[in-house]
Image (tube, rainbow, N blue to C red):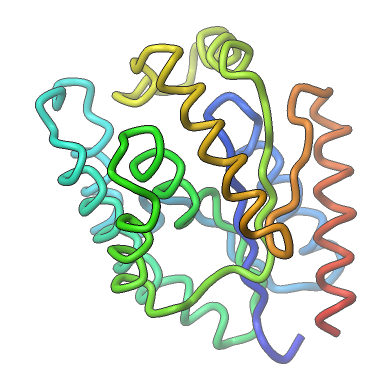
Length: 212
């Protein structure tokens, strides 16, 4: 693949994103592709430090705009230091979350305005958008139940938000699905993990074939 391919995975926590991203990365490597598997916020040292500040359960006083700006700052550093260089060398980048998370969580659920948060992030990413986004859809109650059952997983500040907040996040994602239907592909994440993976893998392979 001459030019890299930027693929992001979105959805609420508990949807199985991290598991499926790892499975996709393994399959693509078996197929002979160079793959970078990463996440937001994080993926590099500076962004991981920002992640700890954002998700710290003790930071309950954090203002919504501060939160949005911190996500954008982490995104910028991650993009420039890790994602862009990988794409320039022809790698497939699989990223767990990107700009759509900010639009759904801060723009819509926090009530900052999706357009306002989009503008903040355009300054950060300079127009570098994914070629494909896979959105894992799941009822918020089921997603939170999965998180609570997963004892090894960190419980962060956003997990502690009430159920209404998580419903708003899902509404935000639905708006993004309508607006960016050419880029965002929805998968029912309430199904068994292998079903979810197979649907995601099929869409990724279709996108690769279209690029080639």
